[in-house]
Length: 135
Image (cartoon, rainbow, N blue to C red; front, side, top):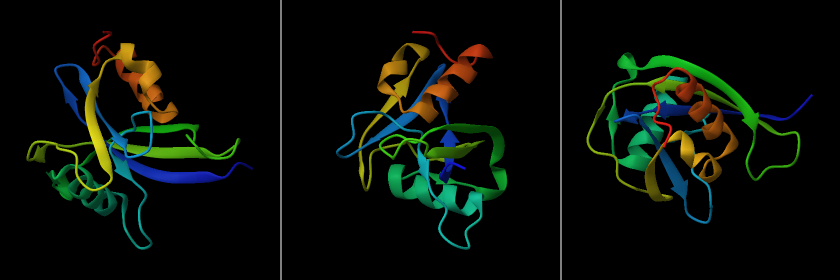
C-alpha cells in the first residue's frame, strides 16, 4: 500500500487560467493549499493555508467541493501519493505571495511542464471540460 499524503487545494480560475504557487526552493508550481493540521477539517485547513500563503480570506461555509485528485507526490519517495481535495470559492483580497510562496502564476494547459503531478491532473481535467485555456 502506498504512502498517502492528504492535502486540500483552492481552485481559482481567472480568464480560463488556473492559479498556482511555487514555494521557495522548488521549480514546479503547485495548487495553493496544504495539509490539514490534527483536528482541522478540510475547510478550516484551506482557509488557514490560503490566508497564510496568499493573503486571501476564504469563507469556509462557501467552499464547494470540486475535484478529488490522486497523483505521485512531487519530491517524495517513489510510490508516495498525494490525495488532494480541491475546492472552489470566492476569496476576499487579491492573491499575492506570502510566507513560503516565492511566486504565483496563472497556468493554462500549455503550462503542463511547469506544474506538479497533482496540478497537471487538475489542468487536464479542467481542459477536458473547457474551463481552462489551452495556451
